[in-house]
Amino acid sequence: MKKIFFLIFLISFYSCKNEEKSVEPGFEDFGKEVHKPAEIDFYNFKHQIDSDYSFDITITDLKVVEHKNVFEIKKDKHARPEKINGTSVTIEFDIKNPYNRIMRIPFPWYYEIGTENYEGLDRNFVGIKEDFYMTNERVVENSKGVPLSSFSNEEVIENTKETVVEFGPNESKNIVVKFTRPFPSYIKQVLFVGFDKYIKKEIKDISYMSEEQKNSYFEDKSLNYGLVIDLESKKIINLVGLPLR
Image 1 (cartoon, rainbow, N blue to C red):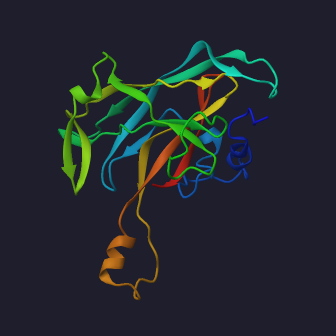
Image 2: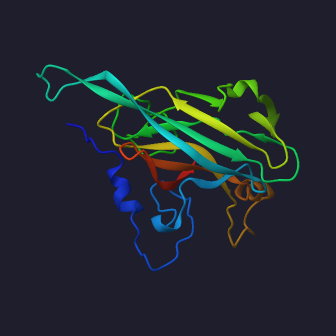
Image 3: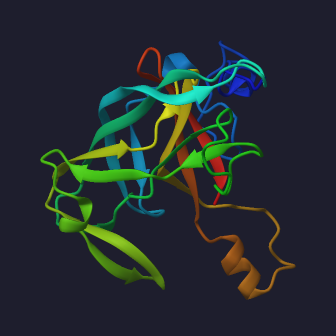
């Protein structure tokens, strides 16, 4: 019988190893602790556009929606299938332009949610450990129900096609992400991915590198924030850093 508790491995990796020592954020590897739980606000953090610009994120609402009798399970291979409920997640957040000028930014829109316990999802998410299952089936809109496509534009920025949204000076926008694919009710925790942090990798000795290698090595790299959501308490219980995409 498959494990029915999500992310058991997180328990050991996310627990504080030294409660007396201040811990700074670390985003190198999935599963590493970002902060001591007592020191971090899981509902307020930065979404970094690049190495110079970041927008403020505030999670304002988290809904866990129940779906009646949408799954069938067998307690053993010869048992009669039993109907069980499912749950889906809706996340609402404010994203704020902290600058005193109009900004047109690449907007975070590629949201995913997953678990390592439900094979009904996909395994193609790059950066999560083996046997981790994700889905990106979601609806993204503002608080008035207007889809993201209606207040964004597609632009090419530095050879990459981006979804761009314009913000007025110090403007906040309320965004709702509705995941449409439910999890079986035995899934108790899931990982939500969608926001970025940028780092600049530095080394001491670059004398042996070519100019091309130096430019590549020092290029800013994007990492994702992962929010661990407890479906029973309907709360975010941890914030972790995921590997490079």
